[in-house]
Image (tube, rainbow, N blue to C red; front, top):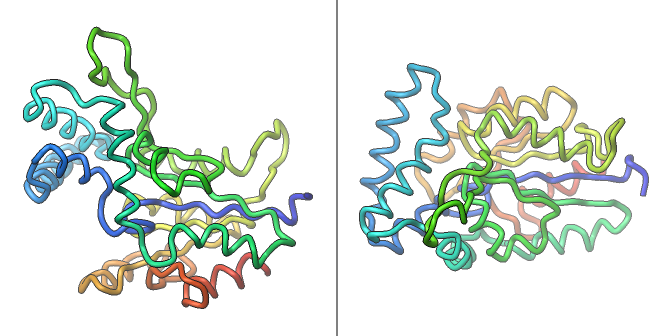
Length: 255
């Protein structure tokens, strides 16, 4: 199918596809206080941001440290694979069937789906969303460098600013020259600050950026309004057929 028929839908994960942060599943599993953990991470990020540190990666360090302290041994890839299935319980209405449903009513288009998260790739690869996706980007880990099953360190990162290069990679596809799916044929979905670079990049290049918010969260819409200048739409998160979000997606990919 020629590039004019290609559409790439690219999704952040937490609070975009899931109600909450999926790394919190790990905290809960090991009995770590979720609220206290994220408060510690936020404080550390505020301190380190003054030195222009990549603050997105800080929570990974804290996560590995807290699990080590409680478990007595390191977090493992097997832990993440096992816990990834619990993401299914966090999905917003209409998921995961949205991915098949949108293709079924748009058979004249070549639609691809991509997860682009500052979360944990090994968890995302083992949830129900994975089988619908052409690619998954997230923090990835090295294992096997030292004795024992514990994770040895980061293999690849997926910070908010790295999302832009990931979007370009998706756009290029397998081509060495040109673009398999032009950015103007892309929709990027997100919900917060880590999505600002991606929101801006896609919108400036003729694509569509959508900020979703959870209508059940009291302050969600006011937070989403802060991103008004970076996006084309701000919509309640509901992936069911004929929802406002569904209709905007359908109209956009058919323009």
